[in-house]
Image (cartoon, rainbow, N blue to C red; front, side, top):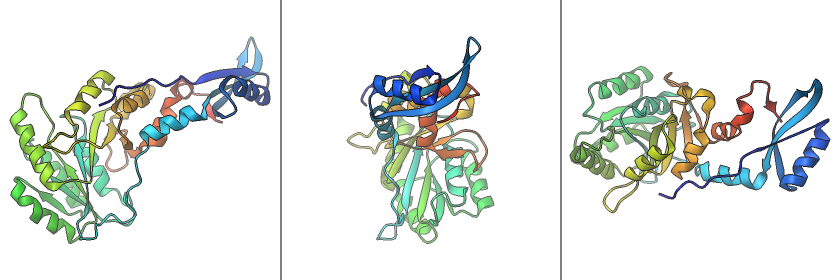
Length: 288
């Protein structure tokens, strides 16, 4: 996994009026400057306009690093197989709750009908939790214990579902044999997307190490996307965009609480707002 390359910080400009401040920003950062935030402040009692700005090329580079490819317009495959999205990640990252949010939120995938499948048969209460959400939302639900069961489970889900959300066990370095078993099972499912779920409070160096552990190998499929979870546990969402950029994976969704299904949001808009956090952290900033 590539190391994180730092991006230039956003810059502040202050002046008597917005026109003059914008001209200063343009002279400093170039004609393609983007004004991201603006507010009125007082300097020695004098009202001033202050803006946060960045070159549009920098903003677009950040967006390009985070933006996932759009989901297919028609999720169900030509052969009738549903589009499969797997969630992987360490224990306690929020995979099961995120899976429930994706599956039970009405309209999450447009008119496509969702289903749930779990291969997390090791954690006490994991299956029961997901089964309860599925029952309450009237979402088809399957449990797979063995690779030989995959084809039949997918076939049953195909009767009612266009997209299937797959929950997996948490990975533990101390259980290499268990990890090998469930990753082999996931390979048998052959998901179209594999989303690595990580808490937003995780240190970037640890996140990079975990990302490496979930990357594709010669024998196993690997993570293709990132889901940052537990944004509500990060004060002012400081550093979450840097964390996402450090993983070098597109971020389709972020999770910002435990409420199912409400606390799941599109990833890129949230991360771009957080990238200008030195502005957002101050309550009197307003969008430019």
